[in-house]
Amino acid sequence: MIVWSIILLFGSFFLLLALRVPVAFGIGISTTLTLLLNMPLMPAITTVAQRMTTGVDSFSLLAIPLFVLAGDLMNHGGIAKRLIRFAKALVGSLPGGLAYVNVLAAMLIGAISGSAMAAASAIGSVMTGEMEKEGYPRPFSAAVNASASTTGLLIPPSNVLIVFALASGGTASVAALFMGGYVPGILVGLALMVVAALQARRRGFKRGERASGSELGRSFLDAILGLFMLVLVVGGIVGGIFTATEAAAIAVLYALALGVGYGEIRFKTMPGILLGSSKTTAVVMFLIGTSMAMSWLFAYQSLPQMISEVLLSNISSPILILLIINLTLLVVGTFMDMTPAVLIFTPIFLPVVVDMGMDPVHFGLIMVLNLCIGLCTPPVGTILFVSSGVARVSVSQVVKPLIPFLIAMIVVLMLITYVEPLVMWLPRVFGLA
Image (cartoon, rainbow, N blue to C red; front, side, top):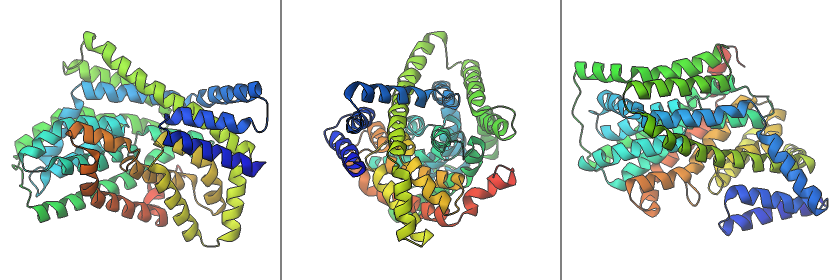
């Protein structure tokens, strides 16, 4: 019965994806169909509904809509434009400097908003035109923007790290995950800059104008209030002053105050901002609810224990087990969005790596970076589609210039997988691990 349940669950899910059914509906329908093998129709539907409700009934998850709103307020409040100007003054004069600006701005904006989509849309709308004026092809600009936007999912505050903390059953704290994300996020950013430098040398991209000391100082002062949000939010969480949810509420108030202070947010613009945040939140929460129902089904069928037994009893090398997990997640990331992937596959793979002696925080960052790569790959690469849309080029045009950036991200993935201190050093310094 368990074998037939697994076949029906994954078979129906992949079939629904192939039929272009939205991921959240596909997860919910395949979970319900599988439960019908074990119980009548009404109890199966009731069980899925109950698990969806209890799945989103978490105080920690309240941080997600608040961080989404904070990100929207920052994008509409002029903070993104100020951060881009600061990044341009800092690295814009280097060979291929505008590509560096794109990467650095994505790291700053993504880190503050916790949203890769917000970073991709905000930066792409500003940088694509400027890069084209300096001779950068639009597909290349979109490739830089897509890969760089994922860094905000590693550098805190990050919504997906909060989701992983929930999926881990509390074995990985949000504070530890936030601190562990800094080094991987910065390494990805540096790796992308190296690729951009090599491409700039090969293609002969122009240098930007060097900013004077006074211009650099002015742009920094203009951006410092936005940058302070990182200190306020992450410092407060790590210092134990407030929880991630409370930090998200403070981020909303701070972003609103800055937007109003800059004169970018007015009373008449607030309904549109709130509506956009509400739509994003509804999609994310529905995904979380259906994914939690599927995760419960895994536990009900003892699937995590079965996979753990098979891997650990047949493969003795931890290096090989981690390679298999990484390859599986890389494939998963090509067709599944990040939030459901984290919620569905964490209960499957976390027991395996914990039995090997790996810290859940370490595995969480491996999983998130892995799925970040998936956001940039077809056929369901959300950030790839956003970046292509903003740059007004087709996805097929972006794939070729994107390949070197994806290779750089995979190299960093291998580094953080097998060099544990790259992730765990900071959490240990702050006594979080």
